[in-house]
Image 1 (cartoon, rainbow, N blue to C red):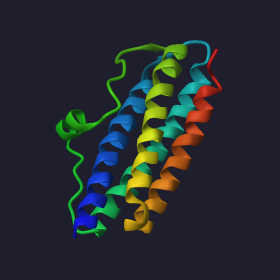
Image 2: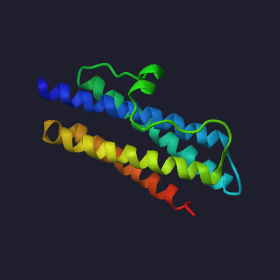
Image 3: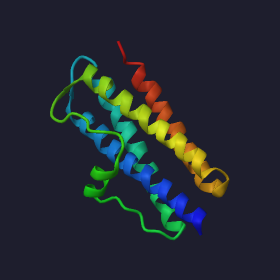
Image 4: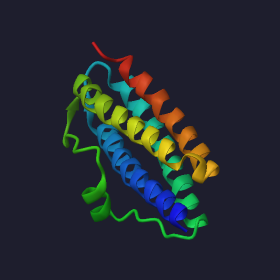
Length: 147
């Protein structure tokens, strides 16, 4: 029982971060401006779509383990560890400058959870590894815009 509680806690923590990052990426997608608009806009659209699927898979894993998933906006705002991103129109280079550190933090948080879940639940561990691989792919793509 203790293992299930620890696993569910890690899942919920990463759900808060994934949901918060989803909204940050979507906000930037809508409001990016500048010479790299088209490329960054398309990349961010793909990224938040990927994050949405990851959120759904992780929430369903938590439910499979017998606990309800919490995605309430107030809970996400209070519990995400990624910090706040800019609102309003954003220059293309500011979008990259802002999203690279928060995407890296999301990846690092996933890595920590993967280690904590470890042998307690290899299915959840595998799912988190897959999610981190996707996040890392977008981190690499975002970093390619750095100048």
